[in-house]
Length: 382
Image (cartoon, rainbow, N blue to C red; front, side, top):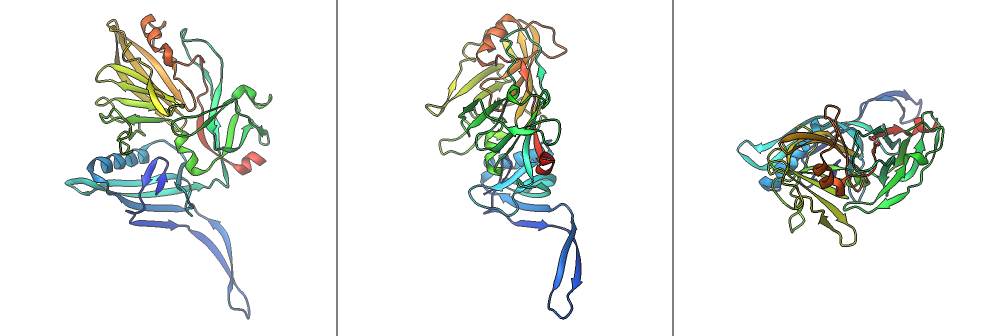
């Protein structure tokens, strides 16, 4: 099975794959010999065309087709294309140039076909993954005031390094903690452990296999009315959301980093959280819904950012007949959410709301605000 980031591309149903690499070649004949000397003068970006079908029944096929369609319109950069378990010659990082996702038959949603045109960015042999923090202080007077500035990387990552403002400024990075999630282990790094002189918020760079990246990310899910993410047979029921424009006012939406899940039920006006129990390998309920004050309702959920290592939403609550908003951030590797007051919202946080959300809000008032991308190995080693 091939994957583009989190979207499966079933090979059993694949109907086409074409790798187009345009090269300008200079050929010089060799006198009195059979053959030629072929020199590659330059090469254009390699465009990979993929086409196939989802043939898993109306419910699953429609869900996967919708995910792929949203992924193609998302702002997510440098998506890994890979096959789990064994090699794939076209594995690498790509951007989606064009995508067509539609039912095979207009009046039948049980089979969907897709056609992707991918622009080649590069391979892991030429690039490191990079986390570029841009820390800022959350505006709030509740839930603690720690100044911890933590970022994370997959525990499977190799050659993890701090990278400063100037080329050549790099040194090995050591995690302060490893956290076991429901998907894959995550290593936690402290920005303040970076060498002095590397700038206030140095980048964290690392090498990682394509398939080891997606499990360690953050997710937004449309529950589609299902309480559990998987069926008893292990089939996923929650749809992965890639767009902030996704319609989330019908079913509960879930923010997850595989350590904590925040279940936001706008229609019912409720909020619940679940924490990953590593010992029993199960999700346990925090109990927010059961303890939700009668004076508080979840009024509105506004997705503001759906990224690879950080998701953000603005939650508006009806508190005693008045509306109060919070900016909520879920970073990869964190055991709780971070919360702050938006610029257009007057403090303080209502006392009942502060007390109710206290079990899931992190103490730190610093959001590292780390963006995930690629950096050329040549740039790093200059």
